[in-house]
Amino acid sequence: MADLEIFRKTVYGYMDVNCYILVNHDTNECVVFDPGAEAETLTEIFSTPTFVLKAIFLTHGHHDHIGAVNELKEHFGVPVYASKMEAEKVLGDPSVNLSSMFGNPISMHADEMLEDGQELDILGTKIKCILTPGHTAGGMCYYIEEMQSLIAGDTLFCESVGRTDFPTGSSSELIRSIRDKLYALPDDTKVFPGHMDTTTIGWEKKHNFACPEG
Image 1: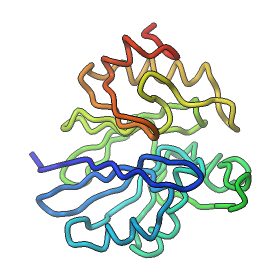
Image 2: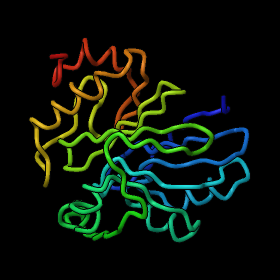
Image 3: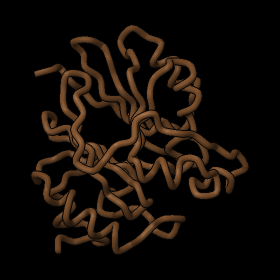
Image 4: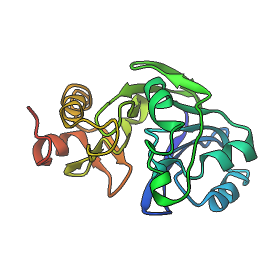
């Protein structure tokens, strides 16, 4: 087994967002999930020998999760991964990804468009892509079975769920995504959300008022 670890780096733009760094300590190679702001700080981290950036993964395309993507991609020459649906409907449109609302329009494209259920071999482990529409049309969670860990973005929070009143959002789809796909994971799966604290699938089944286990 690879010596893997997940670090949380909360970055501050228009709001605070949790970006996560998955690193293989055997090789020092890493990937980052949702680098939403503080491009300069993240560039410094990935310029050290202990964090060699290989890719950027997006759970969804809202402005607070993509704010540092273009700078990191240009500086390190790494690919951006996102769901095919999100790439087509959200990432390239500042009015849909909400960046124009905050006076800093952002448009980008994904280099790798991911499908539901796709498994990626990266950093010496496997990452499973779980399409979870609801917060946005192409929201995607990333499950690292070896670590029993889920990068959940804004789909599932500790005792809450993501908003569905933004463009391409759907409350019914969000609830279905959580119940059918995320609650099917082992109860001891650690959940790393886009905002707030970590939790587990088992805890959310029992305590999530917005999406109780159906």
